[in-house]
Amino acid sequence: MAKAIPKIGSRKKVRIGLRRNARFSLRKSARRVTKGVIHVQASFNNTIITVTDPQGRVVFWSSAGTCGFKSSRKASPYAGQRTAVDAIRTVGLQRAEVMVKGAGSGRDAALRAIAKSGVRFSCIRDVTPMPHNGCRPPKKRRL
Image (tube, helix red, strand yellow):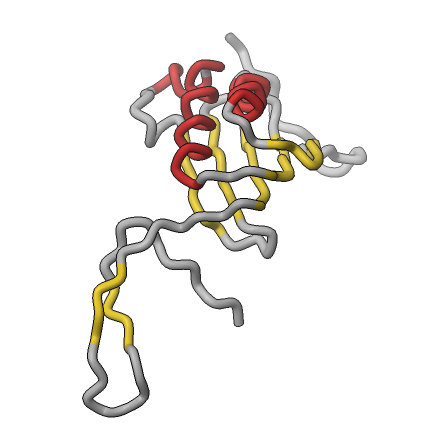
């Protein structure tokens, strides 16, 4: 089973030593990864960015909703940009693979913001699910 990554700002009691009356210390450490995978999920309603380490364990995530945007503003390109900047600045990545999923308007803006923040891309992959004439799609949106 994979070992959990300590959370940012968590104050956890950690055991040091194996004796019964082992001393406890408070640990507060930020999760820092230099290499990882950035998942950009851009839907028509929201943009969610998840940063994982190379093994796939989530280090940090951010969405347009957690950045303070509400209702239809969550789907805007600006919200995607702000979300990406928030996620990258917190973690401090240097090299990353980028997986882009969805057709929302925040997708390109998030990619530009990630590139501008100084993260070097090893690859950009589009992982949007495409049906090979499987299930019947939902009715078209009426605007």
